[in-house]
Length: 309
Image (cartoon, rainbow, N blue to C red; front, side, top):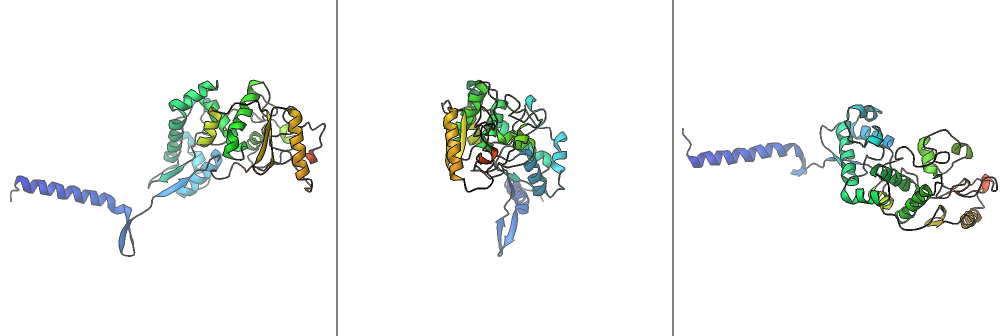
């Protein structure tokens, strides 16, 4: 039997429709007798998560043995800045990702890093970094500190300004968040011994920024790092929930610390405040030589493992 031209066209159209249906079928499930599209799996990476937390989440999402994603880094071919030295910290962009069938640790990590590069290397971000006399990698590092130190999005810009002011004045950052990163923990209980530890992330003993970001910051933290408000602040301490005091005057900062202590005098053990955001070292906050550790305050900002604010 020979097909007419019209018959051949009809056969082609019908075949295309069937082919389309064949592709769509795996996406359909039966529910209550009706076909509904199956929801794809997703993976949420919150703002402020460290790379180690992302690796664990990917392992769980893919049903892999713990440590599998970390071991895959060498073959993931991630497009990271040279300064990163192959460490994706700061570039596992916080977002909700679709996990298609057949996903691997390498494919998910590449998607996160590619997303970060798109956001960080955009013209506005690059221009903002240059205005702040930093490169993009340094800006991401500052943003990671802001993400860890700021109790809320409102304070992010001021925290970024404190970081920049201290860098410009040649002062150590004295941030507890960098100590926590070095010790792989999340706490506001930082001891004097902690501040004397040997680590490139000890911002009490070492000048400048830490060698890498200390978490994976979100867009708000990045914007704060690139465009912080004007101000001369050098110190900050969270006196109470929603009440973070920023100042350039050390004496005023000590009064803020004293107010914190007065509010929390019933506490039997009050740890030091978060640093440069209210640390308890000379030139950052009250001197331990003049104030006993028991009277030094504890900040109330959440740890970096909190979900996006």
